Image 1 (tube, rainbow, N blue to C red):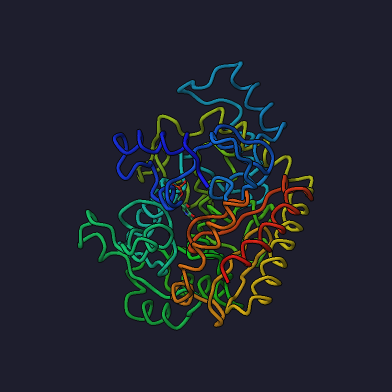
Image 2: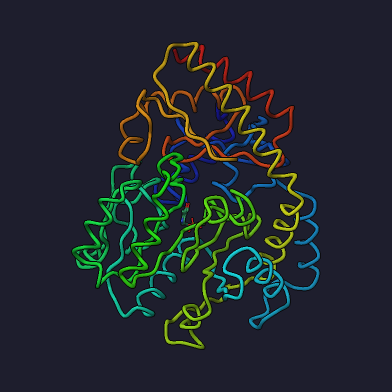
Length: 426
Ligand SMILES: Cc1ncc(COP(=O)(O)O)c(C=O)c1O
């Protein structure tokens, strides 16, 4: 559990930040968050002198684990050449070429600074391109912290029971129509009624902000077809899945193609980033070639570009994907065996290096199913694992992520911790 030094920092933070933190999920670690001194490979080292196996990985970006030497070297080399120019540099070209070799070949990229900015700009682009106002999103999917998508949002918003944030005007929320994930009928119904006014459907191809919920066969395909039929665009929000489910992300994994893809997390190698990628004909509507405004002081930041490119180059060896998938399988098996041995009701959802356990005996096919599981029991699992040196997300509505740094030693430590944690919770 967090110790005295974390507690003292936490007390100082109370008088500095709303709720003591700068992003709400961080306050969900009870009784107070641990503070990190440094990180290396699969481990976080706390200010209290503890080593934790990290399955949060910055909420997804760190697919190579902490301080991968290739990424560190690329960042250092960039720092030696300065870190912000206010004019283009080669790094953004190299990263864009790399991304376009996997997503929307022949298309264009716009780099921004976060997943939030990416989905915000993508929605504006879809509205500008189609001349329509409405968007469709799925209940329990999270696309960042801006008004259009803070309606029926997952992640911390659902966790704290605030599906629509205060401060989002009703008039704005009304432009966002909510369908049910993995429920094609619910989308068809909306499209039949409003299809000619819908600019875009935005979806997480694997819902990663309501635990982990894979798309059922035919779901994503139906979204492609519906958007095509109604002249709307499909925005695939691959902020989590991009370069996590493989080099072509969820679209490669499931064999589908969106009109616009939003990326973030992994493509910045652990630094703040977002990107909108899509066909030239759509993307060229962004300023300055078009009239959909987007700009940013830090867009295509040289250090971020260098870290992102190095990360993808390491991923191209295939080795991190192999190690991460193997670690995820081992963690899944340990959760499975121990939950079964204690006679608990549970379901595990798992796609490559993303997984989550839900304490319910029903299958979890939708965020609504996920929210019916025993969240208190999950919280206890999180706490008991933390006591034993393993950090999984403090909320059921997040994913457990593995990385290419999750070696046998880290996995063994995790398996032991899982066994003991289950003994104490059931
Ligand atoms: C699918 C998805 N889209 C968008 C975002 C927002 O990204 P950011 O936190 O970088 O703004 C997130 C963040 O977790 C996400 O999971």
